[in-house]
Image (tube, rainbow over all chains, first blue to last red; front, side, top):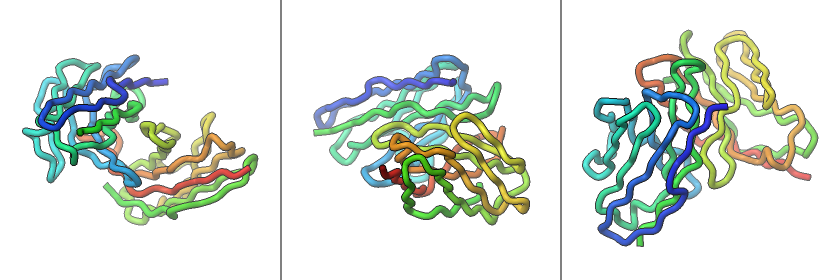
Length: 116
Length: 112
């Protein structure tokens, strides 16, 4: 089956620093990837849609200058949380869309970010 | 994309079938029904999807009513490892965005 990986699986950083999270589709090409955020006991909230070779589309209320998304290849998208603060602590999950075959989205295992 | 309504929680005995309902009364003709599940502290796992015909794979069966306003996900022999939050989502397949909007889902607790 389709596999999506994320790195790192968890990260702890100091307030004010930037953190980069990678999302990779391992066995298929993904022209579209998505980034979600999930707070404890809540559902997944879509942050942005990332299209290969173009600018990401952000959902309403998500700061594009704070959450930088780059989708430079068909298998890699990155999310950079800039100047992180404790309120950015969350579970970040990416998904990749396998548009060529089943048009199904497959999710990564998630990245736990803790900002001190 | 149409919204869905699911019960917040359900229990199921281990070894029995788990039937998870989903209402999507405003579904459009070109919208598919997708099911995902999320085990605690993991990313969601794709289970199955369908348009109007019933579907079955190695994980589950999906039964969609004739009017397409509701569906049921069936786990034929639930195990303790099936304890998770199950999400029913409708979306237009092959749309330009293809994004999935998650609701609150159903927390399924499989009990020994």
